[in-house]
Image (cartoon, rainbow, N blue to C red):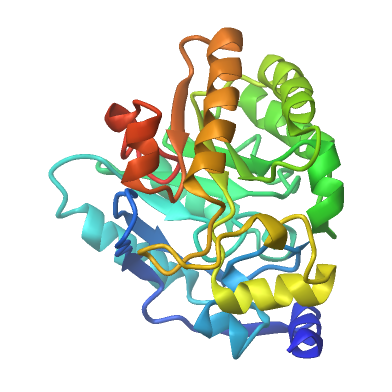
Amino acid sequence: MLETHYKGKKKLVFGVHKSALRFSSEDGNACPNYWHFSPYSFCPYDCQYCYLAGTPGVKFSPTVKIFVNIGEILDQIACVASKLTATAAFYLGKLQDGLALDPLTGYSRLIIPFFAHQKNAKLILLTKSDNVDNLPDLDHNGRTILSWSLNPGEISSLFELNVPSPDERVVAMQKCANAGYPLRAVIMPIVPVEGWQSIYTRFLEKFLESVPLDRITLGQICSYSAALQLTERKLGKNNAISKMLEINTSKDGRMRFPVKLRTEVYRYLIDKIKKLKPKLQIGLCLEEADVFNALDMKDSIGRCNCVL
């Protein structure tokens, strides 16, 4: 299983994706459903906690894919957008990294100008990449929201291999902020290792002063059993993630830390963020309604990274 996974990470496949545009169907958690599209599949990065590694399409074909029918994919988006009565987000980053392969494809130079001229469609692009050289001079018209997934360096060094460092990602964010792009951040997965309070406090104090954000979303581990098997083959069964996970899966089939622990972590970090940036919107990613209720955040359900 692990050998197949790593062979796939080194194999690039070109293909055509006839159903690249889809509407998500999350059940069992509080996430809203939204449009997302896939000009890529999987990614070359090696995050040890990656839940996508356990999804059926990746488990049985763990290769990095570029879909070459980008024109057809954008036509599908335009067709859907033309029937909308209000502006909606189209998300790039659910099943892949939005920019990791951009130096090879240059797709950003097609996708971002496309959304710049759509009446009822905006792009939300999620990435861990620092590949932003194609972006600063593009006509984005404020209709592309760029979002970075990142963690403190102490956490990233433990669980994210072959990935740009958090500092490199922050530099990329600053370049895009200077080009006028709206920015968001996803702090995920938050892993409460020993000393996590001081680790995340130092990180947030520096990060929130470094980049202008419209929204920050917090999330924790939400892995599938097949993905967890890969995590444990990479890190051992007694790794910092596995030893905190609940044995039983949640209603949506994912494995998470206990509600009490998640709530404690969120409450601490939300308090820090509010003190640093009182007006910054805060959301939770792939969380259950019970957690929103425990944090008195029912009004924040649906205010996450994937939607406007």
